[in-house]
Amino acid sequence: MSHVVTIKCELRDLAAIEAACKRLGWTFKRGQNKFEWYGTWVGDYSGQDAAYIAADIKPEDYGKCDHAIGVPGAKYEIGLIAREGKFLPVFDNWSSGGLKGLTAANGLGGFIQAYSVEKSKNELRRKGYSPVEQTRADGSIVITATAV
Image (cartoon, rainbow, N blue to C red; front, side, top):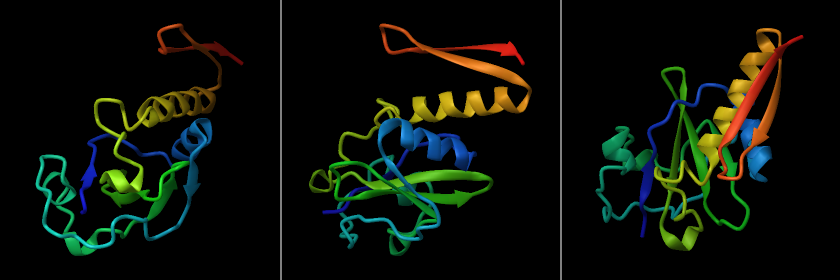
C-alpha cells in the first residue's frame, strides 16, 4: 500500500533543515534525489493530504526529490521537493515504512518546531544577536536574544 502525503509548511532554509535534523537525531541527505517509499502507487489513498491532491505531485513522480531525510528506525524516508523557494516534505506514511506517526497535528514528529527554532536562531545571529534557547516544562521553547 502507498499513502504518499505532504504537510503544508514553510521550509525555506536548508541550513535550518539540516540543523533541525541533527537536533532530532535524523539524517539530512543533501542532494539525494530519491526517497524510500513503498515504491508503487496503487491508487489506494486519496485523503486531503495525499501528495497528488494537496501539492499536485503526479503519482509517477513519487519517490523523486531534491533532498531527503532519514528518520531512525524508519525504512521509508522524507523527500524534500524544491518548489517556489520552499521545500515541500513528502513521504509515505503507510505503517510498514515507519513514518506513520508523522502528522500535521504533531508538526511532523516535532520537526516543524525544531526547524522553527533553528531558523529563528540563524536569523538572530545573521542580524548580530546572540540567541539563548530555553525549553519549558511543557515542551515549548523560548529564545532570548541579546546584542553582540
